[in-house]
Length: 118
Image: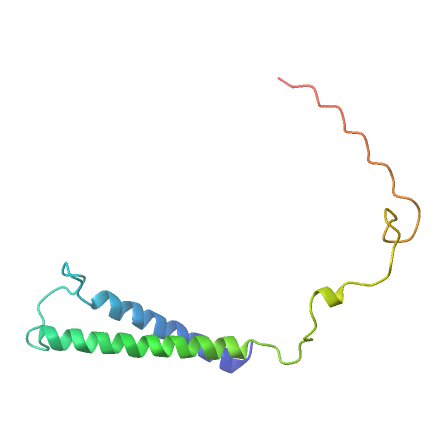
C-alpha cells in the first residue's frame, strides 16, 4: 500500500470517529446523550445547529474520502477483458478428461464403517 493511501485511511478513520461522536452528542426527542447543561457555552438551539452543521461537514468529508479511496484502489494496468474470456478455449470431447490423458478412474468404493469402541 502506498504511503498516501495509508494517510487517507488514517484520516478516514479519524473523520469516522469524529462523526460518530458528533452524532451521539446530538439530542434526540427523548433527551439523547447530550448530558449536562450547557447554558453557559451555547444555547440549546445554537448547540443543535452547530452539531448538525458538524455532522453535515463530517458526512461530506466521509463521502469524499470514501470515493477517493475507492478510486485510488483501482488498478489502471488491469486487463479489461471479462472473466469468461480468460477460460482456456481448448476443445475437449464430452465426457473426456480435460487433461487429455487416460480415461478417468472409477470412484473408489466407500469404506466400511468402523466398529464402535467403548
